Image (cartoon, rainbow, N blue to C red):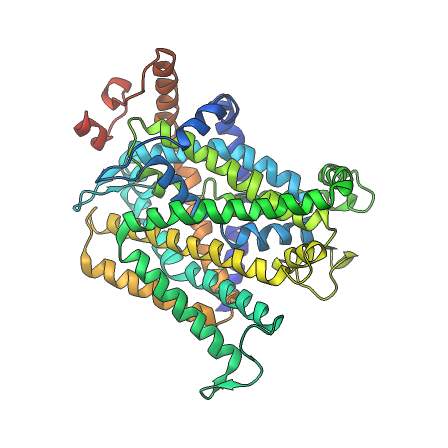
Length: 495
């Protein structure tokens, strides 16, 4: 059975999905006339403006909520893995995916706003399941997306994030005398197992304190924590770059030469650089996967395109700043191994598997002894906020399958289930959970990208309408009937 799931995962996350994501980003960039370039100033302005309401959150809170899902362990371990198997050139192709993915994010998040609804508690709900049903009229298709999301975000991926938190905390304790001794037994249990169980219970209780407060509390925590964690991580990368400034020109030269197969050492890795750069770019920023529209739909805005702009900016921030910070920490310090066809081309970090260990080693070259602790703290914040976002996505899709209604018993079961998976995931190995979670996320990506390619017209109409009203000096408002957009029931009732 495990071999079957591994095979299924390799089919879902094949090069076909990578090509689809890259092609969709290129197509949407042309169709939006590269709004991610033309509208950069407007993106930035809208990100820090807007009001919240009883029904929805502010644009910045929606951004923070979506960023809490985008910024996860993939931004640390995932980027380092891309360098290990794709070479330094993978960083360039990650940038390309981020640039193109911004237009994809605009399309999906604007659609999330156009077709959003109010649930029976008066809160905004939306996302791919909603716009697939209302925009394409395919309820079975919408249900397929919703069920895949509930399974992946509600029960599979939270355990993986919790496992990363527990592992990083264990690694930190093993490298310092500050923590308890993990070599013996605690209460009749292996000390490492007992320590991870304690970590899992603590994380589960922290999560419970947040998710039982509903969307408002989740958004409030994200609004406070996400900027703090991201800016702290970026500043650390800047410090490391400043202390290795003599190497920066060489580093950029290696990245660009490797990206096009021109570097003597990494020339044979051109194909792997593209594959790993695009794959990790997609995985880190989640453009096209259908995760961002859930948070985007929760925002209180006067025009759907406003959240499209804000969420396009989120892709830039995630890829160009957070992911790039990891790449620079690893590359500027030279702390990375590169493997090609099973052969080790470079071994700067002997005995360290591809992943967060490269970041730890890089930081230790500048701040000796700080690597394990810093990465443990960063992974905690990145992974914990991602679990919060997973819960919100799962709850939104549960509300959808329950007829756009919040049913207390179903919501309670979801909350208890995700808390249990956090505790369970903290003490178990993550390999199978990663495989099953990847299958769920991959299905979400396939279903969502096909859907937005079929349903792009309303988002493009909204973009033109927004730009027209801005030229007239107006604060744009949305009238779907005047634009010929059908089934945008929330906006029709609002108007």
